[in-house]
Image (cartoon, rainbow, N blue to C red):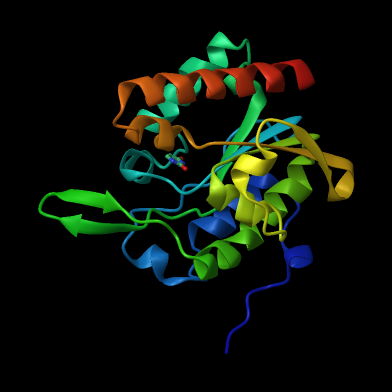
Length: 204
Ligand code: URA
């Protein structure tokens, strides 16, 4: 079997890492996806936001969080006074996983094996960017960033110390908010998400 190079052997810049990721075949997800969607933002960002995986629009654009979830995220962080251009925004999994249904491509949740394979890239992004604060949005990002089997709702909304002298802040994924059918629950959950973003703004 052909083993990919060890992380240390890779060139030590985000740009080089992104080029490596562009041809990644570590798991089968690259076969159906349009392209790798790598993280985006300053290479010395103090804050890194981590989502699940690119969606339909991200897959086509080649950029993270540019579709509906990204627009909601942009809106809420802007209201909280956070400047997206200062964040490094990435995903736990770098390829869009979907099932074709007619002309549509239906998002499928990445499995733990896919998350583990792709952690290779996330680990290197963290190593290079060295963020002081990492924001995990949703259970997949949480699973990719911690080995502990902690439930999102138990640790949500507070900064926790993690390895490397960093802090981890856990919140829900914006796509979750978009999918809540009940308007009242949706408004409540949106308010909690806004609250989380305000807390993050105060931590920065
Ligand atoms: N959802 C994610 O988790 N990431 C994106 O980039 C877009 C939607």
